[in-house]
Length: 420
Image (cartoon, rainbow, N blue to C red; front, side, top):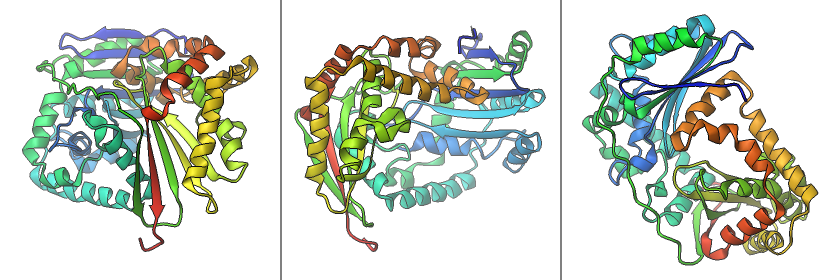
């Protein structure tokens, strides 16, 4: 993790990050674009995710019907995803086959076709994907949570988009979105693996530097106003299980409070599931029969987002009982200094999760580009040191600051049986 990386900005503004890792004859290449659902105005929600889908429909040089076969034939794997803040594409290949991935990404940065028939076909696919999600209790609850928690900021809507927009977005809307954001000066190429930096940079320049720089895209800036008191809602749907989600407004990834809040999360939840059965929420809610499961998580985001706790309610309990237990556990963190030994265990768990998530070559390349979306690579390299500096007083301070009823939204999913 301490290995140096080379960072270069090409003449057209594209950022390149290179990290040699010679543990295996593998190279992972990720290209990131600074565009996600936070950049979508009303009427165009879901357009970033849909554009990502269209990038797999081919160019003249790389037709869609040959792409999967070409990557698989060479022993590689590839995929893409869209988040709130970015869109990214990756290929992990045998080291001597990475040129295929680089040529592919350079080509589809400018030459994706967006055939109208493919657009219509993908509209059907994405609408079907959305309809399928709407049958899932957690999708219904999470989407409603975003709707209530964000009134102004575009984090208000789900990444897949609103059904009304999925029905009306046109081929030209998609193509214009692609041409606006898929420009080299809005992209970061992160490559990690078994290569020589000098030769890799030379090849990247040959492929990407010829692509013309575009106008710098304007990103939406709609700060969410401070919430004025606790909000509560309920949604109904099919199923037999009651779910509760409690979301606290949470600082962005570059806020100094982000790090003590990660330790607090480890105390409550066992660091994203690691040793979760010894975590405070598991012992208080699950072991004592209020819930059958409880978990919490946050995201490293550009703008302030949410820390969510999800409780799968025990059939013999009521939502208010579980919420009261949660409030009691939070109050302990606010009123009592956590013992240093418990802080050390929580930090150790958080460090382990971080290490597991960055151990292989694909993950190494991921983190290089991911951190560039909201900060710099230093965020990654200093993460563990910042966790280690968290004190019991830091945890108590952020518990008091952020875990207040007026800073949260509580949603309950009420099941109406198998048939809804």
